[in-house]
Amino acid sequence: MAQGQPPCHKSKSGKSFSINLNSGGFFCHGCKASGGDIIAYVALRDHLSQKQAAIKLGCYNESPSPDDIRRWAEQSRERARQRQAEESRQSEERRRRLKLRDEVHTAARIHREASERLTELCRGATPASDGEEAACWAVMALAFDDLRESEREYLAAVGLEYNI
Image (tube, rainbow, N blue to C red; front, side):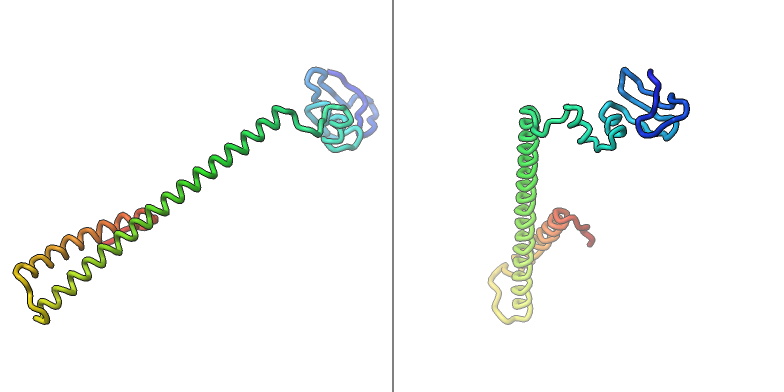
């Protein structure tokens, strides 16, 4: 530990500035200025930015090292890979939602057509063949169950609650 005149102002004792010679850390007991290394000290003493002080000390190089370039390229490739994976995931999820939507529409159409045919049969508008009415009821029951299950899956896929 060394003591001396502060670089940023004059002191009466000439010993209000302390510097750790091992770490480079310093502290001024008068104005409370402090720092952790020689670059911060030169910046304070010469009223420079950290970058300007590093350049003055000769420890700043504008061009990146080959290791930095390789690391940045790898980071860029990793970000691109993650972006591609996310886009692929979103695209697959969209295809799944569209498929589920189509299943809902198909089940609703089948249920509607069976209901319309039953209505015609009940009104006597068209003659019924043997077992046609029973078949329509069976189709409606199956279509209704399929419609509810398709709706439940679709709503879960789009993040909504299913309430019936």
